[in-house]
Length: 306
Image (cartoon, rainbow, N blue to C red; front, side, top):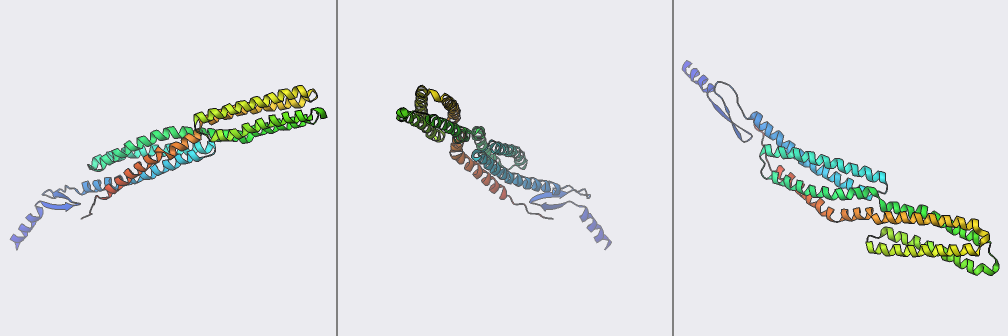
């Protein structure tokens, strides 16, 4: 019995081999544990973090796409600016997480996932280049601002012009009535024609079409001015009212010029066209790459053992 006990104690002091999480760990004789338990836990932790980062990339990418779209569709400068800021913050988060994930995958030596992440980063660079064009256009809101001018200050100036002419026309003598009424109708119709063209101009994206409309506007402005000048000669007793009409027409012309300048920028139409065009394709490509990356990471199997 004593001899057997001695042999047993010697066996306990010899090297032992343990398999942990698919890795072999050798315990050094004499009880000094070395092992791969800590190493395997580190690998598992890095893998879990890689999956978390990949998932977060999709979340943040969805956020930046949504915020960018809201910036394009917003009807106020404040809403557009706020949404554009959200898009930029989500973009920065994506870039930080992508760099962290890159280092993580390299430490894990995941040879399949590293090229997949590189492909996403290249695709996202293209997406960000598009957003760099879209967001500044979206926050300008020039078409919306032009529309507000058309239905606000421009309409008010046109109404003031018409009302001043109608008031001046009440002082005419019977023998001049037909001529004066025709001139008032001509001047009023000319301004109305410009108002109709304004709406078309704001919605138009073709440069040559806008140029033709601006030519029509200029002709109508000239017609309204000519009718007003003739009325001044026919109605010397209505100078005050005609002066008010002249001021209103000048104000209308100035507003129209500003409206045309804003409409020419076409920032809302251009940003929307970019969002509905190439950006949709790039967005789908980026999302597909992230989905493939998540699927590849999910294939790695870690079995916990004692």
